[in-house]
Image 1: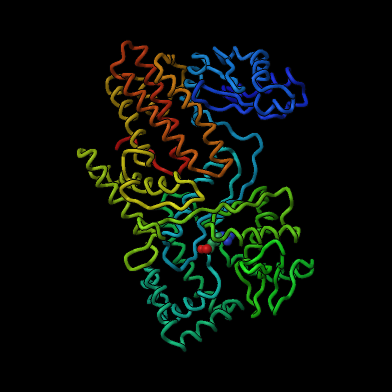
Image 2: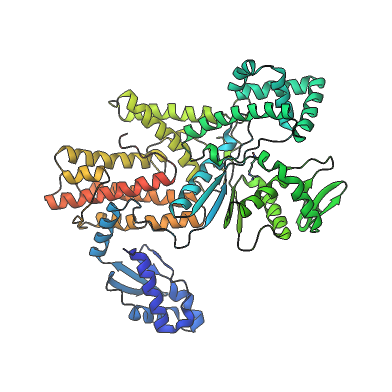
Amino acid sequence: MTHPVSRLRELVSAAVVESFGPEHAAVDPAVHRSAFADYQADVALRLARAVRKPPLEVAKALAAAIDASELCEDVQVSPPGFVNFRLRRDVLETSINALVRDERAGVPRVARAQTIVIDYSSPNVAKEMHVGNLRTTVIGDCLARLLGFQGHRVVRQNHIGDWGTPFGMLVEHLHDLGSEQSAAPALADLKAFYQAARSKFDADPSFADRARQRVVLLQAGDPATLAIWRTLIQASLVYLRSVYQKLGVLLTDDDVRGESFYNPLLPRVADELEQRGVAQIDQGALCVMMPEFKNREGETLPLIVRKKDGGFGYAATDLAALRFRVDELHADRLLYVVGSPQQQHFSMVFAAARKAGWLPESVHAEHVGFGSVLGADRKLLRTRSGDSPSLVELLDEATERADAAVREKNAEMPAEMRARVAQQVGIGAIKYADLSSERIKDYVFDWSRMLSFEGNTGPYLQYAHARICSILRRAAEGGSELAADLLAFNVPELRAVRLEQPAERALAIELIELSSAVEAAASTLSPHRLCTYLYELASRFTAFFESCPVLKADTPEQRDSRLVVCGASRRALAVGLTLLGMGAPDRM
Ligand code: ARG
């Protein structure tokens, strides 16, 4: 079934052509939600200038030309030039019926699927993950889900930092520990391992020398050195897997393609850039000079491909990775979910790649930046000792706090079930706090706010979902087969929905907006737009539930209709929470 709003757009566009000619066919009908009607079209305001008529007159002409009787009970014009639509009740009822039976909750697939490579998480390994790795992982994962759900082919790339100078020190330290058996326990605690190597490096000049030698051996591909390096990377991958599992993100070992993968490709990257005249030697280093990129002093900022000492840096690896993603992964679109401080780095990499002919016009590359996680003092979130907090400790604390919060709300819940729910609520709270703030802004990490059951929070949405499930459960226990089916997402037949009360109608309108919210979040790469929508949806559900008794409805027909509305709300919330990467608990 065509979505009512898509159909409305088609009808408005047809009226534009009919009234003002085919040359205006491409004008955006600008149909959107409105406080004064169900939907409003702003197209008359846009057309007015082109057709040299007052907007109100344009709007009146359009309203007269639109035949929206299949969808609307009412089309009206209001100044300065809005066309307002009120949907027919039966159209909404049919939509709710379709939505409750559709596992996509009415969200269409895109007409043209793209291959979208998303670089996210990408931590530097052989180190503990810290809060600085949180946002890229959570936002990147949500974007992967959103774009994948829309039907795009999403290729996740975890560009881990598994190569380069720090590995000299780490390999040398592991080498000093001797046999694999004696190294195993040290590697189980990566944080301690990294710190031990670091202090040795700082305190012992001979170790520091050996560490530097190791870098050379590693770069040269010395087999013994590579073997130690591999042990280290394997241990890191085990650790990464455990963090991703805790966090509930999609990333797997198959998505890992770290910096080391590109190492053999770097000399060619440098040579080709030089041959094509894109890069030149400047004070011994091979650089791409692009006058559009300047430092604070106004001098051209070089993109360093190969350092003076012959080593390759971060930019060279990113150029090689970009080529790989375009040529081998066949990307139509490249996304890099990396903190805002790296914005210029990516602009330069993209510009250099365009110059080199590695990034064709048809491929779109975008740095998806984001702000920092701040503490209550509005400075970067730190532990008491001044470190960046460990991600695992943060996640564990969230689960513990959620456990206490769930216990307070529902003392009867068996401990085992509560542990499961607490995991979903705790991790969900952290993710939601991150995703619901505008991506590009900093946000303040605040336990009590994110774990609150009130307001625009993860627990509030999950609670709304659990509450609907509990209504359905109670109805099912009372013998309603319909409720049992709805609970099991199993609604094969059309059910009579009757949207009688204003609160039912308002909820229904919100429900059919899920597809617009998904589209808005995906097209602007802004998960917070989906969050805002879900919060609004949950609030409308609450209003519905307060004014429209379900279990105590007046008639069996009314009760069944409201059960279907509950089922549809639960479906939309479940789809939304899943897209955010959050659990949708059925009890809380
Ligand atoms: N490992 C890098 C860091 O921790 C992030 C890598 C981002 N991805 C990339 N293709 N450069 O800063």
